[in-house]
Every structure is written in C-alpha cells, then in structure tokens.
Image (cartoon, rainbow, N blue to C red; front, side):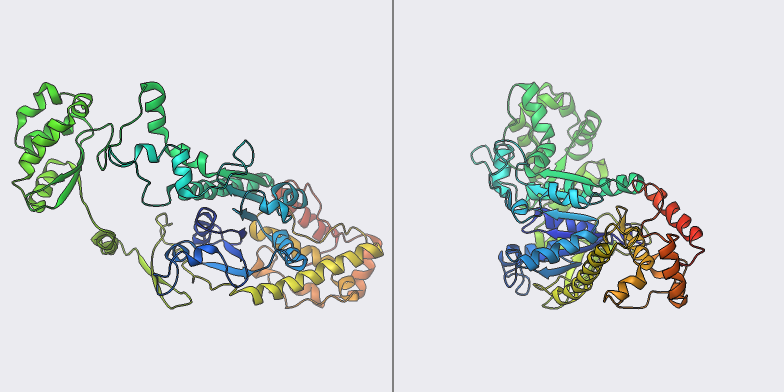
Length: 498
C-alpha cells in the first residue's frame, strides 16, 4: 500500500511551486485533482513546446494528476469546486495574492466550512506584511533573498540555473502537508499552512546569512568554486577537460598533496596550512594544482583523486547526465503516458523499498472533467436530498458532508452515515449509483452490502424510535473515538446498519 493512498488533494495551482508540491503527493499515492482554466489550462503548459510539443516544465510537474477544467468566474463552477473540496483532505493553491479568497476559496472560509481540511497556500512573500500583495516570480525572489548577490563570477551576479525559490517553496509545502496529515491522523484536527517562496529560500540561505551577520562581510561570488572552502571547484586538465574536486579537512588536504599532487611539502606551506589560509591565497593554490593537472588527462586526474579518496566529479552536460551510468545501474528510468505518447521520467528520489511509485500519465487540459462532473452531479443530488431531509425534520441529520478524519476513513464514515438514512433519501428522489462492495466495513473495498437486503420497514421503525442515528457516537475530534462511536451505533442498532 502506498503511504498516501486514500488521500484526496484538490489543487488550484499554476506554474511551478504548488504543482511541484502536489506531484510529490501524487508520487506517494494521493489522488490529485488539478483545477485549470478551460481551453488554456495552467499557463506553464505554454512555457515551451520542446517535449514532443508539450512544455518541459508542465511534463516535469504534472504527471499522475487529474485535470478538471472550470471557469471559476461562474457560480456553477464554484459550487462544483466547493463540493470537491468538501470531500477532499487537502486543498492547495498558489494563485495571485488574494485571488483565491476573492473566489471564495480563502483559508479562513474553507477551514470554517471544513475543519478537517488541510489548507496550503503558497505565495511569494506570505499572507501578511507589506509585501503580501507583491507579485513574485522565481528570479525576483532569488534577488530579494540575496541568492543572486552571491551567485556568479566576481564581475557578474547570476541567477541559479533552476527555479530554486519555486522548488524550495514546493518542498516546504509538501513536507508541511505531510506533517499536517500526520497530526490529523492523531488528533482529527485540520491545518492552515502559509508557505512563502522568500522564507523557503531564506532557509536555504542559512550559510551565507550566518557568514554575513556574524562575519561582518558578504560571501564573495566565486563562480563555480566554493566561497569559503579551498580547494573546492573546477580545474582544467591537459586534455582541456574539467575536473571538479573538493577538500573538506586537513587530513584530506595532506593526502591530496602527497598522492594526487605528489608534492607532500605543500601541506606544510604556510600559505596553505589551514582552510582559511588556502581561501586567502586561492590564486596561488589554484596555480599549484593546475600546474600538476596540466600534465594529466581527465582520466588520469580522476584515477589519482579516487586513489587518494578525494571527492571529485566530471563536469557533465545535461545530456550526459541523462545517460549517467549510475541512473542506469539503479534502474531509475520509467515511461509515463501523455497526450503525445510515452515519455521518459525519473523515478522519485525517495521510494519505499518493495513499492513501485505512482507514475501515471500527464493529463491533457480538462481530460477528467467529464468523469469528475458526473461524480459532482451525484454529490449535488446527495446535498440537495440532505437539505430536503433537514427540512422535513429527519432525526439526527445535521449535514451531509465528510467527517473530519483522514483519507479513506473520511469517505468510509461518510458513506456509512448515508446508509443510516438510505430509505428516506430514496423517498426524496436520491438513488445510489452503484452496489456497495461486500465486507466488514473496515475499508472502502470491504463495505457490507447486507443492509440493502434487510427490511426497509424495520429500519423505518428504528429511525422513528430514535434507535438509529445519522451521527456516529463518540467525540468527533478524535478519529479513534469516531470509529468507536460507529461500533457503538452498530451495537445499538442490532447491526442493522451493516
């Protein structure tokens, strides 16, 4: 069983940060329903057309999701989304500042309606403060967080080559949602998460932040070399290939001098006696190393480095990375479906031993709208029937929506509650769309259908006498109490409810 099997995530998402978080949840088995604009979809779909006509960003971030196209300017579409959220465990959004709240899907409103819900909002600068309404894109947040100021050469500050701020926010949204799910499993309590790109990237800026605050100066831009450790970076060999190496401590430095450079006396040179001295005399240090490497090929240099136990790497291109022998040796490649056919994809980096991760297709715009609309129409009938039942004063019926519990349990308890009022629901025009599977009621695949064959008259009598309740006994703030309450209800009802 996958860790998040039975968890439903509704995502009002676009671009990178939120889609990155929800794809990680999908990899672990969660059902992710991605809400997109009709016809155009997530604007990341149009970033480029390099993957057989699809956007490389969209392909990367959106496998294993269901696409629902809704025009949220229309009231019917909003109602449809509200019905989906009522059944969901997690709601994620990263719309422009304030947009979700204006549509009626802000944290305060949804949490009030659904206390069990885990609400995660991802934004550039967070929901409070003077920057809360400021638009934010990855490069701009890299600038605000100071990352660009320490990246690049001494002459030219540079952005990081990937969407570092987006990915950071996505990772903290992902881990925050996992933590909230774990807490809800224990307490039944939902959560509100406010994840900002600035603060997420700020966490990753820990080293330069402490270095600057307490050291009195900013880390210097050093190109591909490390700003505070030497030797650590690229060195050219005699065949014009580049080898990267890193020395982390004095033991490694002494062995590097003796076995790689074959100059043991360098370890005692006052210019290089400590890491601080080597950083201060970086130009002299690099000249000494490159003097040796200029007489070696890339293969010879790496052979010496490996022999001395010195950390090293070849500078590969992206294409060379895709053909990396280690990925092939560890069987890390799979194929996923897409609107243009099978595409290569790497297996998620964190996988449970013995479990194959979810690698489902990348959806087309609104590909699952018909299926989800049909389910929504069915749920709409349930809510309408519930309203009519409340109007007629059916005993014990307060609302027809999922109980505040985790994952599959929420839907199990929800459908059991409907069983208690199945006869009156039918009397008010509701029809169950499919036969419930047979079993003991402990899992969605094992619900008992036996109650369908019992006397309707007997159940009407029990409802009238108050022996059957639409609400499970026990304290609904605790999932364990709710299960205990359901057992008590079955005992009280003489197991008539299955």
